[in-house]
Amino acid sequence: MSDRVLKLGLYCSDKDSFTRIQYQPQHALVGWLGTAVLYDLLWVKKNPRGVFFIWAACLFWSPMSCLGLLLVPLAALRRVRCRDYCEPINLLAGGILLVILGIYFQGHIPLADSGALWKLGGGADWLWLYVLFLILELSPILMVLLVDLKYRTLGDLRPLFYVAVVFLLLLPLYKFGFYSDLRLQSSDPALIFAALGAALCWQNPSFSFRRPLFLLLTATILVGAVIPLLRPWQNLLINPKRCSYATIVQVYGYHDLTELRDPMFNAAPQYLGRTNSLAARWLLR
Image (tube, rainbow, N blue to C red):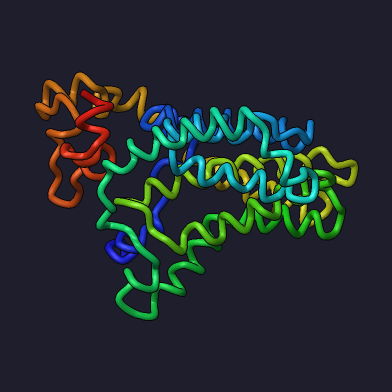
């Protein structure tokens, strides 16, 4: 069963914030800060000036996080006019940056360990594994939806929350890379709005532990918080050197990702790209 789950990418390795910062700080920070900036510009101020340039700048640090950031303009379609995006900073600066990034990403070969679940599964059982994954991962979000349907707790955040839910439902249908780590980066913006939705439920005047929906919501959040609460203890106190750079260099002998070779996973294609690409020859000399 574990091999099937791993093959389909229905695996969450770095969902808690502590581990995201420890292993993938650039992706975590881009996802969080990019979501905050786009939310402020498109949702609060309803002004898309510079949005495309900001999105293209984030693309340099975390391409898959930028895929998740697209949910903000999608949710804001009725709040911001599309023609307002066509302004100088977006078209000129954003366009130039996008061309440069296009040259850079041209050097990355397609990931062999990627594809739609129905093609990777090798049978019809991918569907029930996908449904089981959603039930285990998104049960707190389901409770937020039920609370909002009854008590209308989300208010102005409702369109963003519902688009975020659609993102979280669709992303697992396609596997991105080994362990589907790249899909995890794409889910960061959606998870932020899901967390804000849960916070609004707790702040609502109707909140009471005597109401079953609020009690179930709190219980599912607490169950999901067990691993994140234990992760700092596990990583910092029990075995702090296991994932340190010193151990990787001194014990395993790896000095950079190009030397990292694993029987199941080669890090170089996923994170570095081709050595004969235009980017490697001209931009990364």
